[in-house]
Amino acid sequence: MFKKRRLPIEIIIYVIGGFLTFFFGVIFVFLSYPALNISSVLIRQREAIVGFGLIIPTVLASWLVSLIIRHRGWKAFVPSISIGFVVAFLILICKKYLSWFPEEWLIFTPWGIILVIISAFVGGALYVRGRILLHSAIILIVFYSLAFGLTVLTKSLSSRIRSYDIRIPSENIMLGATLTVPKTDSPSKLPAILLIHGSGKQDRDETFGLFNGTFKEMAMFLSENGFATIRYDKRGVGQSGGDFLASGLYDFARDAESVFNYLKSREEVDSSKIFLIGHSYGGKVATIVSSRHPEVAGLILLACVASQEPDNLIRQNKFISEAKKESDEERKARLEMLDLWAEKVKNRDLQNYSDYFRPNKLSREFQKMQQANPLPPIWMFQAMEYNQLKTLEKLKMPILAVSGASDWLVPPSETRLLELTLEDATHPDFEVEVFPEVDHHFIRVESPEKSYKMMSLYSIKDLFREYPIYPPVLDKILNWLKYKTESEFSENIKPDS
Image 1 (cartoon, one colour):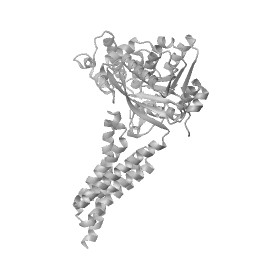
Image 2 (cartoon, helix red, strand yellow; image 1 turned 90 degrees about the vertical axis):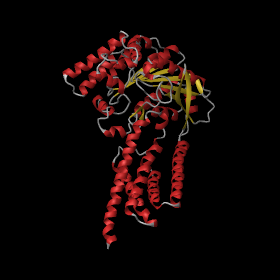
Image 3 (spheres, helix red, strand yellow; image 1 turned 30 degrees about the vertical axis):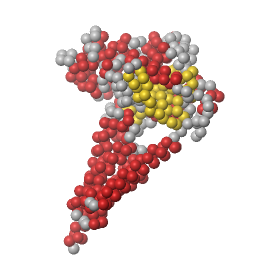
Image 4 (tube, helix red, strand yellow; image 1 turned 30 degrees about the horizontal axis):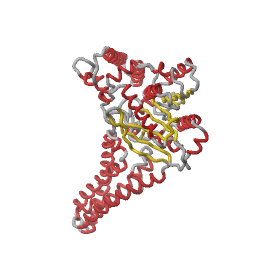
C-alpha cells in the first residue's frame, strides 16, 4: 500500500526532474554560445558543446533523483531512465512546435536523443556505483565519440567541397583563414574569390547571432558551384594575430593584400581569375587592393560604404535615434557626441583606443558604445581621410555593386553614389542592382526598421534563428562571376550534382 501511494509522487518527481533538466540544459547552451564567438575554433565545435549542454545536467539530475528515490539494484535505473525519456519527449515537442529551435543541434537529431537516454543511464549508475558505473561511462564516451564522428564523416562525404584551415603571413602577424575548393577531377585551374569583411571585430565567417555567417554561407555556395574561396579572421580576431584596437583601414587593406597574394600562389588557382568580394567597409578595402593590383579579375561591392566619415556614422545614428524613438534632446546629444569624437580624432587629440577612456575626454555613453563595438581612433582617422569614390573612378576591371532596399546600415543611396561615380568615369564594365526587401546581411526583411529590430535582438528568438541569404542575391553574384569567366572553363570545373 505504501508503495502504491508513493508511485504518483515518484512520477511527479520524474516529470519535474525532466523539466528542470531540459531547462538547465537549454540555459547552459544559451550561456555558452556567446562565449564561442571568441574563437572560430570553438564555434566550429558547437555540435559537441550543445551535446554536452544536455549530457551534464541529465547525468546530475538522474543521479540526484536516484539518490532521493533510493531504489536498489536495477530498480535504481527507473528514475534516471524516466528523466531521460521526459527530456527526450520535451526535445521532440520543441522540434515539432518551436520552429526557431535550430534543427542542426545535436540534441535535435536521433543521435542526440539517444545520447540523452544514455546520459540518464549513467546518472543512475552514479547511485548504483560498482562496475556498472565504469561500464556505463565507457559506453557513454564510446557512443558519443562514434555519434559525433559519424556526423562529421557523413557531412564530409556528402559535401561537394573541401575546406582547409590555413595560416597566412601578413607583415609580422599570421592570419587565420579557411580555403574552400570544389571537389573535381578536372585538371583545369580554378577561378577564385577573396571575401573581405566589413568594419568591427569580424571573424572569417562574418558571424552574427548564434547560427549565421554571411561569408561562410556565401563561400560554401560559390565553392559548390565551381569557385575556390578564401575568407579570413580580421587581425586581432579569432585565430589571427595582431592588435585590432591599434589597426586602421590601411592595415586591413595590407592584410587583404597578403591573402590575395597567397591565393595567387595556390597551385589549384588560376591567378588570372581571382575576384574580390568586399562587404560594407570591406568594399573600401577591396577597392584599395584592386587599385594596387590591376590584375584583379573583377570586383564585387556588397552594400559598400561610399561616403567618408563621419557622414556614414551620423546617418546610421540618426536612423537609430528614430528607431528608438528618442526625444529631441537625446537625439541632439547623440549627434553632438559623434561630432565631438570626429573632431578630436581629426585634431589627433585621440590617437589610441585607451584615449577614449581618459577623464574628461568623451561621454560615458560613447565609452559604452566603444566597449561594445570598438572603432579605434586610427581607423576613424583613416576612414575620414580615405575617399572611396576617387579610388573607384580609376579602376578598369569589371565591377558589380549589389545592395538591399531594407539596409539601414548602408542604404541604397550609397550604392547610387558608386553608380554615379562609375558613370561619370565612363567605366567600361560595371553593373548595379538593388534588391527590394533585402537588408545589410542580404536577408529578406520587409523594411529597414524590421532589420534594425532583428539585428538589435529585440526578440530572444532573433538570437537563435537562422537567416539564410536571399537566394536571388547569391544567384546574381554567381551568374555575374560565371559570365566574367570563360564559359568553357566554367563547364569544366562545375562539380557533379
